[in-house]
Length: 445
Image (cartoon, rainbow, N blue to C red; front, side, top):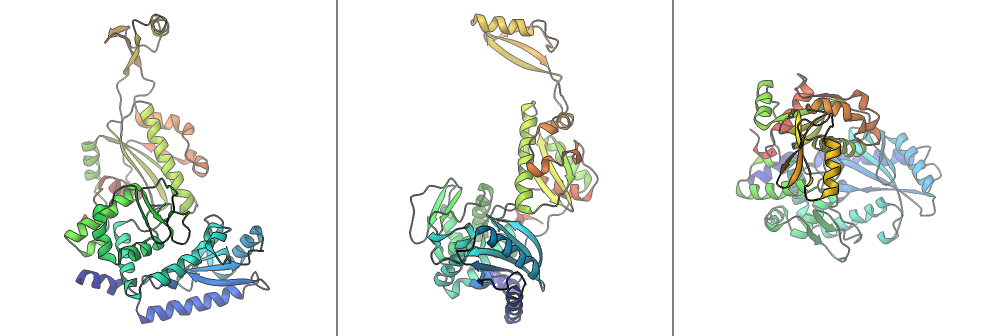
């Protein structure tokens, strides 16, 4: 198809790109093995990932594994691996099951990851030890003619916002994309196959397993049947891929691969849209110096717990979202209203239950928190009670210290600003625009 040819023309590395990438990787491996930390060590550098499999796009990451003997203690593997990475590239520590270095070398993004050199994936001593087996599996089972199909799928996933198994995206990894193309036999065949996909779908290649996974999508790792390759995929990202696949097959267009950027709304439009939906409370704070895999789970936790706190106080939630832009974090909490009446109806026990009725009458009969006299409705005692809080922003401000935001964000609560009006700030306006404009990426104008 012409559109897919255009995509490949834009994203597939040409001969010059390949030569440059291979040259940089050769230099990087030489630098790794020439570091002081690697001197005298039994370490085998091993290229894994999309470059090794021939499924990379024009701007790839280089994933270099440092394979240590299984006899090396775990502490030494980590300390030496980090030392080599810090000497070899400009980067910083990240964490999977154990730390590794993510950075840049001669313009190429690179990960340097220590792992154990094992001969069978069942011998894995750390979670990443299986990765070289992933590389070999794809190289063996992906027909050369399907490499471009993988590239198309990755570009499609990037365009619709579902590519990446990291904590920020919660989507489809490159390895999962490769397995899907192997299983379905091509990009378009995969899209056609999604017509019957449902939440809870389970797929596999090769040896199966009876192990159950509580995930929206399960794809059994052919290298390690105890692992679900699709464990990172969120329910919304699975649904987004299904919706995008159906829409593309009906009306294919380049916007699935190269969506138009989200346009920030004018302030008057922001206010009008918020008024149509109810109200919002906006929490903002400076972005801390945390890697994404630590930051985003805590930010989502903060968002979730803040909304639960508001709902426990009687404010009815509609939706919420969290955003990071230009060094600022924003949590946007959509409510039916940010104001409540001064009193709420409180239902008591049935009049027929004597002991409970007596306790209720004693508690509320002369309570200063009662906003009415006691009365009977539907056979039960009732009373209107005064609310302590009628303003959502004020309640959240006072309750903030009791809301769990996660280990790192809890220490930053004194820098949180809470408001039910939209600050005239570009970063916040971008976040609000993304919250209010929920069109799918390929539908933007």
